[in-house]
Length: 146
Image (tube, rainbow, N blue to C red):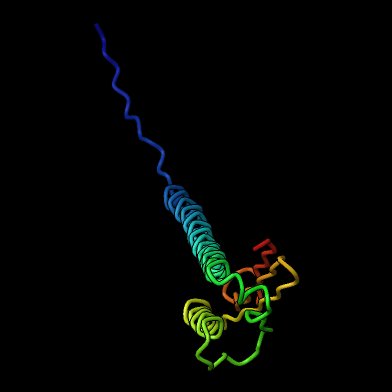
């Protein structure tokens, strides 16, 4: 039996593998950049949500103080405008407002608040700077009854 031997030579790939590797690296890099962008956006939205939660908590805090001192709240002792100076008196409403405004300034960037009592309806506004988040100025407004 006669066995024929042939010399088979594999064709040489000249740089095709290198191009495939470079394309794979580019695709991976774009994917990682997209992932980093998603992470950054997630952190920004998380911080905005944290500020909104703090504003909500601080709103209910002053409402609890007002409900504990219903007489002072009904006669307008808790009324204050945004940007007004902190009360410095020794009455319970003035102390409550002073503590509340100091906490707003401490917990929220450029935190400020306003309260308006009309009859037994109270409107509380908490404002802060959310320039690192979605918008520059944010407000949380709650209207309720005492």
